[in-house]
Amino acid sequence: MTPARTICALVAYDGTDFHGFQYQANAPSVQGALETALDCCCRREGRVTGAGRTDAGVHANGQVVTVPVVWGHELAALERAWNVHLSPTISVRRVREAPIGFHPRFSASSRTYRYTVLMYVAPTGFPAPKHSPLTDRFALLVTQPLDVAAMNVAASALIGVHDFATFGQATHGESTQRQVVAAQWQESTSSLPALDGFPGRRLVFTITANAFLRQMVRNVVGTLLRVGRGEMTPDDVAAMLAACDRRLSAPPAPPQGLVLERVTYPPDLDRWIHAEALDETSFARRHEIF
Image 1 (cartoon, helix red, strand yellow):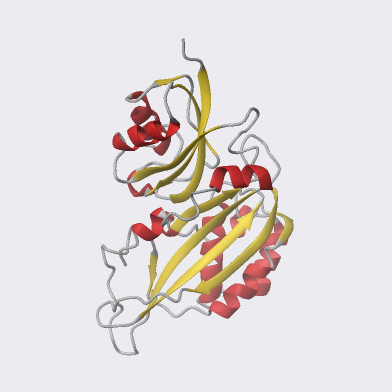
Image 2 (tube, rainbow, N blue to C red):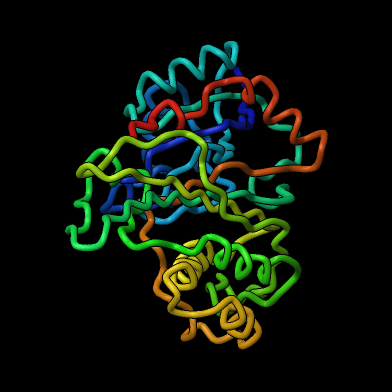
């Protein structure tokens, strides 16, 4: 009799049509889709566990999952079979046998998210560009000029160990203290097509922390965009952070611009998980249609 073993996989997905990662009985979820597809291939002995529970509409390029299965063949064959039964919006990029004691969430040392903004600003006297269906799934369209330098000054206040209660909620009574090790806006060098005849700029916010609170990244982005529009100053953001008052945060940025880019582990584990995956063209780039 073939014994059960726990496998680990790198998973990428377009989260637009899912109500988040976590299983929901009456709504499509990434976890549910992974489990349903896996049940067509082998005997599953437990639930799929993810490194992060992305919200509805949020994407992933480097989600890490584990699941116990009964499978007596090469894991490369299971990877192929699993992908056959998944929709084109989910891709299992690597399947390995998990070492004893490995947990995709609790073994992780940091997570990296990125948020993409497409800025199209019409000259004075012209109507604002209209949204494009080709961009709506993977980026936020803004039609006002943003002060990227001010946004980066504000983002720098987030780096370090802080209580991030202003920007998110902890689950199950956990601490709201987190350590952010990097937070920066950069302008992508890749060109954008004109929208309604106006040129655009792609701005990407990347943030890495040991862990994140619920909706923390989207709340941070929403607040930094207010700084970019001149509605608040970088000093205001630092004061908001220190106040630990959830009521002070700006509304969360829409989910479609957000991607769980990478989950990082201690060096030996990280090499084991990401080896031979780093050379692949990322899911997000393969599906970048704007």
